Structures are given as C-alpha cells and as structure tokens.
Length: 610
Image 1 (cartoon, rainbow, N blue to C red):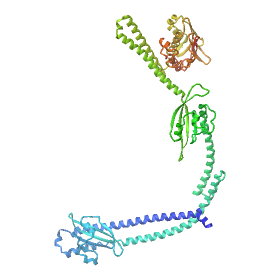
Image 2: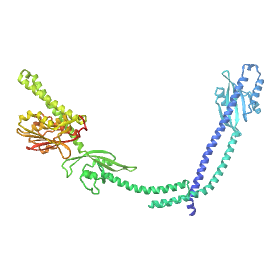
Image 3: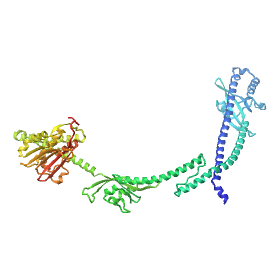
Image 4: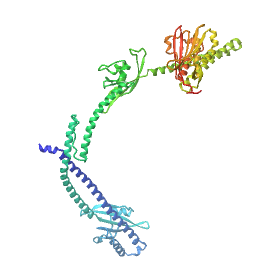
C-alpha cells in the first residue's frame, strides 16, 4: 500500500516525467542531428564525386578524343587513359572506367579488372549517359554488403557524345563514421539520464514542499478562510507562485466585496432607469422588475409565478418566440386605473443567452412612446388639414373659372362676382401659404429676432388704430392701459405686432356687437411683461382649450373658415412668443368672454440692439 502511494506521489511523477521528457528530447535531437549529419556527409561525398567525375570527363574529352584519334593506336590510347585515371586517386576507393560511344570499356583504374577492357558495359546508367543524361547516379549494395555510389557521365566533344565515364565509389568509411557517432550519442544519452535521475530526486523535494503548502492554503480559501498565508521560501517560480497565491487570496476577498457592491449598483440602476425592465426565467416567469416598469404597468408588486404575458396583458406567442431565441418589438396600449388617457408602450423582447446553455430567459424593455405617437398623429392630421385647406379654395377657383369659360364672362355683373370670389380664394391661399412659411421658419429656427426699444403704449394704440374700422362697424369699445412702471420694452416689434393683430382680430370676430375689449400691459411679480387681451365674446368651450393652439384647429370650423381664418394664427402667435422666451395662455368661458395673456421676459436695456 505504501508503495502504491509512493508511485502516486507528485515527486515520483515529476522525476519520471522529467526523465521521459529528457529521453524524448534527446532522441528527437539525436534523430535530427544524426539524420542531418548523414545527409550532409552523403551530400558532400556525392558532390565531391560529381566534381571529380566532371573534371575527368573534361580532361578525357580535351586530351584524348581529339582530331588525331584515328592516328593513335589502341594500345597507346589505353595507356593514355590509364595514366589519366590513375591521377585521380583522391577519390577514396573509387573504381573508374572510360567507355567509348558504344559503351565498350577503354580503360579501368582497377588492375584486377583488366579483363573488362574491350567489353561492353551494360549498366543502365551507362546507357543513359550515352544518351546525354548528365545527372545520372544511384546507390547499390555489392556482394560484400557494402553500399557504393555509382554515377555515369557523358563525354562530349564538339557537341557530340564520344564516350562516357563510369565511377563506382565505396561509402564504407562514411557509414563507419556514422556508426561511431551513434555509439557516442547513445553513451551520452545514458549518462544524461543517470545524472538527471540523481538531480531530479534532489530537486523534486524543493518543489513538492511548497506545493503541499499551497494545497493547504487552497483548502482554507475554499472553506472561506482568507486570513491564512502561504509561506514564501524564495524568489524562484515556486516562491513567485506562493506570492501570487497570497495576492490572489486578497484579490478574491476584495472581488467578493466588489461583487456585492456591483449587485447593489445594478439594483440601483434598474430601479432608477427611465425605461421599464422585466426579466424572466426560461419558463417565462417574471423574476426581476424595476420600479419604472411597475409604475408604467400600474402595479406595486408581482405575485410569484406571474408570467410575462400576464404582467403585460398581451399574447403569449411573441414571448414564446423570444424564449426560442427570436428578438421582437411591438406596441402595447394600456389605460391605467388612475389615468383616463390611453398610454402607448413600445415593448422590446430580447432573449437571455448563456454560454453552452442556450436561451435562459427573456428581457422586456418598456418605453413610453405616448408623446411620440401623439406627434405622429399630429403630423398626419397636419398633412390632412393642409391638403384640405388647399383643396377647398382650389376647387372653388376651378369651378368659377370653368363658369367664366362657359359664358359667364359675357355677363358683366355675374363675371365681376365670380372674379371677386376667385380673388378672395386666391388671397386665402396666399395667407395660408404665408402662415405655413412662418411656421416653417420657426420650426427650423431660421426666424431671427430683431429686438428694439418699443414704447408699449404706442404699440398698443397702433394695434387699435389698425382695427378701428372693424371696431366701429360692430360698435365695440376698446380700452388700452399701460403700467407706468413698465412703459418700454426690448421686443421684436414686427413679431409682437403680428401676435397682437391676431389676438385682437380674433377678439373682434367673436365679440358680439356692442361688446368691449380691454388691452393692458404691465410687469408681474415674476419680473415678466404681461400683455393681456380681454373680450366679452362668445368664449371657447372648456373641451377645446387644450387644443386651441394646435395648427388648423378650429372650435367652429365652418364659421372660422367663413370669416377667412386659416387656423394657424394662434399657432404662429405661440411660436413668436416662444422665440422671445415667453409663453402665451388662454382662459375662456362660454358666453362670458376670453382672456389671452402673453408673458414675455423683460430684456435689460442695451443687452440687445435693433
């Protein structure tokens, strides 16, 4: 049992692992080294043999196979060739044969092969050399089990093949050298393994002791004890590991504290988000909600097990698709118990994905888009109103123009009346387009103010003078009152005149004959200039007060259109007042009268020039 535990110890495993690694490394290095050495020796041997053969080929072609070959006897030729090839003793153990163009042996370097002279060499290498192949070599093993390098080179003279050189070189010494290297390598390997085993026993103890200390500390950390420390025995890797482990213990303790803080921060962020957030588990049950979501849905708390479809009062299919991994977005209309107005929410459903676990739930983000939907509805109504307001006068103009073209032009009284109607409708369209251009400038903020010092009494009196004819026609009494404390103000005179003209014109239109209109200007307690127009007209119903400043909105559409209004006057007046940094309010009661108050900031004198 003790022996089994010993074999399982990290010390024995470490020694065994080191020995195996060194053995494998040495073997790999040895194989690579010996293979490289063998290839290098063989390449060097072959290259040297090729150089000697090429030189012998050149000398043979230049000295022997010349134009006086026919005058040279066979004996003399053999003698010359024998003398030539004997000079190449530098090729260790090589046997050289000189062949003619037919493959017959003319000379040989081996005295024991004199009988080969005059015989034909039938080697394949010789045949290929006589055909002009230069790179022509192979390795063979002879009857003595010796490896030889064989090569054959063609001999050229004046571009023609006149013979060949056949060389057989023994590689016995080369392989003997390689065997010696192998024996040296094996001996060195055995010595290295023995020394490594001895050193491994000594060094393994220095490694396993700190590891045991680390194991004890890891157990303590797992149990939640972060106050213990691993002893540091040095500055080596084990010592650095001990320092790192102690540092990790401190960081882990800090990380747990930070994790708790992050949870609190996340809870704070969720509770203070402007959008509502609901999170579900994989079954679609709500597990997390923030305060905004509960407020938007008009609930205080959700019961355990409440599904997202129940909380949002919507169909289950979109939520089921989200739990399958599909994102979606939809609009949700809700009417809360404490509000009469219908609210519009945009619900964005996003799956919660976990690594290697697929979809683990869903998140629903609620955005209040009620105002956005109102703006979109207002835009659609605006386009429809503009189209209607333009179509009506255009239809009238077309009808009267066709009537004139059909013969009414020949009846002067009727023609004059028709032309007057066309002129009136044209002027109405011009007023409408002009008002639309005014609003467009304000919307794009291209309408710049040109403030100038204005006498308030003179401005209000001029407004009354411009409407004096209409006032006399309806016997309406007008009073103008300006506070002595605020006689002047820095205003865009043209813009404020347009506002006052519109308000006074409306007051005259909707005030019965014999009524009265009061116009006043003073500074209020908030330090603003207050200009009020009060009439004794028919008033405005309370249900229409919230929409009276909307574009093209009319309380009595037929009557307003007959009076020549475009439905944009009050909208333009509000935009001009807003451009001054002020506000306009309207208070009215049916059959009693209306009070319109324009509040403007009092700009200090000299802060803006005309």
